Image (cartoon, rainbow, N blue to C red; front, side, top):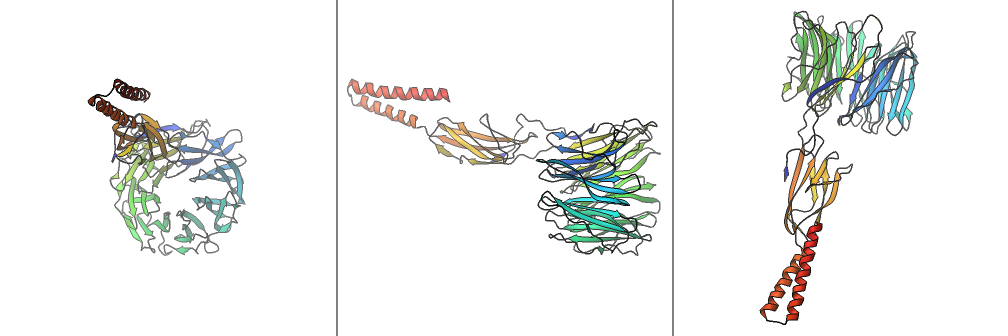
Length: 566
């Protein structure tokens, strides 16, 4: 029977927000951080940071492990060009990729990639795209087998392209392909997403004389893409403000009527008709961020101005929209919210939105966060950063929430003094959910009510790899697969034992069982005493009595000594 008991010698991490703490050294400028987190909580974050020696921004990267925290940042660029933006991705096997977009100082741009494997280290700055007029949206995805898929928008000055290539340690880069071909004249990459089997969708957006159209292209497991097909009709005349994919589904939102109306279309076994999400004669819907998970659950967050100043969010689930809710706090009159905010949704449909606001009453600029659960709704806004000075030029931040509800948040705080003082830093803040889930525990031996004829019993089974296993005060070793085995002493007769597994958060599971030790020496002693009694009863010779008494004495000594050893 599995029971949950009190912790044994384990300390859970603090619940709630823990920080912020500086991750980078001081520098005079940063590019926006990009954060990617796995379901097990491991993460990678990349950013551009000013290097005084070379006089430009250089890509940096740091890995995160829930057990040990953030690693010391590492540079992953050669410092020959100015890093404008970065994208990063981490795979289950520990491999990682950082994509850097560089400015050449002539108005042109280039794109380089650094890749990492635990057993190899970093392979730095492969230039995938040479000199080109501009590089816009960059997206990364993981393919089955450990390959990377990289897609980006590129313009040579006369034609816009959505290009893509795959990379693996065995084969390197595949030939560059243009996803849009000649279909689109001025395309941007709204989003790119893949399922674990490699199928997925890319969402493209085109602006043709002020009329916006979204297109979708689907990927098959063999790597081929379908010809992009329109998601919205170009006669709507709206401005596409957000799009996100979820495996083979997608959501796109756009504004009309001078940002006073917000509409959405979604893919769910076909494209839906446009659905109006917001309309106001006095407020404006000015910025939007949207995130959707593989199951089709998502959050859309908008910033409103005029008489509804603040951030508002609406949930999305399988083609159905919920109700708008305000997710930012009320600030004093004259305060404002910035256009820098982020939203992320995990595989369970839980989400986080983080944003910045200037509180005129306190005279400072603060970061806030609000957490969402499909079952309980919004937790409520909470200030999560130390005060930042007014006038601080802050680059966009990055946030991620794992399946357990733990959050990572990275942001840059700038003092923006008149003189170029190196006082800017990249900060991180983490939110820990109280983990109340007991570790898995299966005892394979001994069997319940098992009878043994030796003074110890083998206890074996499986648990979580990070758990400790304790039986009768003895800790058994647990291997990387969660298997454990060891001998535990027992005493003659009935032995009630418990196997307890304790995880790193102090949660524990216990399996109780009973083992009977049928001691052969005890049986021999009982037989000898019986025989001695029989000899006395029959009045046998002194020699026979003496011999029987010696047997009883010897057996008693053996039992005593064995008890001392046990």
